Image (cartoon, rainbow, N blue to C red; front, top):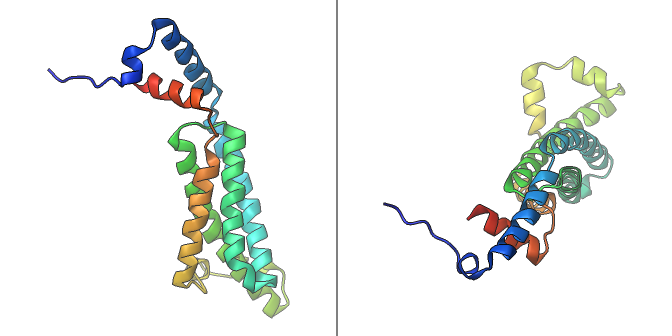
Length: 177
């Protein structure tokens, strides 16, 4: 028969204290809203990718800061809209940040193509083949860019989870055990 590990805190705590912490954990978990975090996160990802594209197209030297800004904005949006305390919110923010960075890179190339052809960006995109769109997504990609995307993803993951007090952290740990 397998032994269940129970933390020291859970063993020495009074039953009334355990119930108080269970109530805190239930309230935190009930306040989470993953569907809203996904909807707001996708919307903010699109807006952040557009801002990334415009910033990099007109100020090419700001590409690292634009990538990190995308991560910070998406992480804050997911965290504030979803009230996330579980790791799923951080994973969502990281995935959206990477998608937003790739989409921002694609839109940057589209804007640059449109500027060189004196055309509107939608016309440049509608005349392109799927292979061109895939190539544009990673056009101008250098290995240093991967570092900035990684930093952006870490920022998003960190900002997507709600800051918890010691009491709330203990309540969630006790809720799991």
